[in-house]
Structures are given as C-alpha cells and as structure tokens.
Length: 416
Image (cartoon, rainbow, N blue to C red; front, top):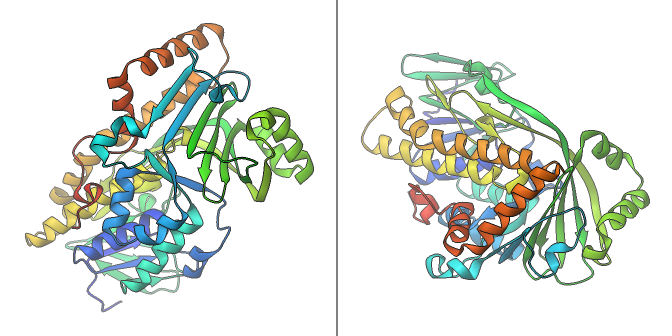
C-alpha cells in the first residue's frame, strides 16, 4: 500500500481531471492522478481532433489556475454567434429573417469587461497547457495505470491499480468520462439514450477571414457548426445520421471534400480540410447520483450531453470549481472531506444545473433535428421572438457564458 498521505485520488487525467487536480492542489489538498494513457499522450498534436468552446467564465477559472496565459495565443475569440434555421447553408450571412438569431458580445460588454461570448481552443492545446501546469505544480501522476477496484471503508477509500499497488485517501474523484470505472465501482447507475446521430469533426482552412463569428446552422439531420479558430481556420462539427457519418468517415479525402463543398461551399468559400477527420456517436447519459460513500463524480462521468450548445466541457469544469471549493473549505474547517455531509454540499450545488441543462439540450436537439412544417413554424417564431427581445437575448448570452447563478469562486476568477 502507498505510504503517501493523499487527500484525493483522481481517476482520469483528461481536461476535467487535470483541471480538478490543479484546483484541489491550489487549495492545499494533496492529490494523485491515475490515468490509463501515458501522460505524454496529452501533448500529442492530434490527440482527438476536437476543439472546444470555452465560456468566458470558464476562461476566468483557467486564468485563476495559471493556465490561461499559455492558452491565450491559441484561443480565438467568439464575439458573435449567428444561429440559423433552414434547409440551405449561408443564410446566416445574409440579412436577418424570422429564423435568424444573433448574439453579440458587445450587448453584455458592460457586465463582462469586454470579454467575448467565449473562446474556441483546440483540445490538444488545452491538454498540453494543463499537462505542463500539472507537472509544474509537482502533482503526482500514475500513468499508464487504471483503476481496477475501489474499496470504501471507515474514514478512507482504497484504489487498486492493475499491478496490485494500492492508493489510499479519504476521497476518490471519478473524472474518466462516460465509461467511468469509479462510477461503476460506486454502483451508480446511469440513464440516457442515443440520438441516432454522430458528429463529424474536421478542421478547415478558410478562404476568407471568419471575423471571430461562430455559426450554428440547423438542418433536418442535425446542427452544423462553423466555429472560428486561430490562423484563419475553423472547426466544423457536422451532425449527421450515424449511417451517413460513418460513410463520411470512410470516404476518400476527395469525396469528403466534394460532399462538403456541395452542401456548404458557397458559405465556406475555398475551404480546405486540414488534418484528419473524426466521427463521434452522440448520446445523452446522466448519472443517477453525483456522489456515493467517499466518491464524487465530475465531468462526463456525471453527465454526457449532446454538443449542440458546446457546453459539455463547461459543465464539467463547473463541477470541478464547485467540488474543489467545497472540499477546500471543508479541509480548512478540519472536516473529513469524504463524508456524506460534505459531498452532499457539492451534489446540491450542481444537481439541478446539470439536469436542467441536459434536459434543455435534449429538447433543443429534438426540436431542431426534424423538418416537420408545424414544428419548423413554431421554432422559427420562437427564434424570431428571442431575436427581437434584447433582455431575453442578453439572458441567453449570460447563461451560455456561465455567468449566472451561484458561481464558485474559480468561475469568478478568484483563487481558492
């Protein structure tokens, strides 16, 4: 058994797990991170091909953890988001219609100190910055290693690794994603369903400047997002039926490019696909509980949502900020950080927000991923109403920026 006096064992060294490690360590907790991938893999240039929309409140958190400076050269501001409902690409670039919705950061600039609505950053850049920060902070990482078992006893939890080694701490945090072994070991069930859709992800070079504008274009098979990146590039997140997405995945580069230009060429303007493309199946998955005896879940281990609003990572990092604050305050008061009364504070803080957002995204997908005339009419009227009511539009922007509700200190840009 390890003789190290750990406070928290973190399963998962991905974006959420590494961020939680930094937050907990900043608050004075001694943590150890366990991950099945070699830690150097976090620096791989094409680790998963994805880019992430980081809300402005989440970027404040990364600044507070000392990661923001490394990310800023690779972060592209999203100053406007244009949402269009239709059958044909390019409508978002023309005059507003009844099915057009525009969000502009300038509208809420007086309350955000001129911050954009969010930042687009390639996941590989975030992983690299977090890995460097974890190393610089002296946080112990056991990798490659995985959690083979979790045993909970009075005052402690014991994690067993594949080589038979064990780690002991008052608390284990599951941050390993949707297939979380920690969640399974805790006996926490999940509920959810698939959408019969997959996300086709590719990075493209554009023939013209994107102007820091993000486009969300709703088509009958699902949304198509054109998200601005640095160096006049964009991340395409293209939702298709699973059958069509798999066909696009295996298509030749020429066939993929031809299909892309046939559907979106007028809007994308001389687009060139850069690097590989990826396909990810889309589903909803919610853990029935966020905590169990001496166990807490964060990120996709607790909730996996449709990427329609780009809020998956932001939800996970809200979990991180809330859990870290609860644990650090409990430790400073001399409490056992793994007891039910402490963990319930975290669950109570995040439970409603997670369920409400997941339900909202699910309803949004179902509303827009069809072409029934009565439904199209209803949603177009709704979009038009929101677009014409400035206070409602600003409320949506504050919610998307993660700046509403009872914010943890990290999301306000304050260190623990």
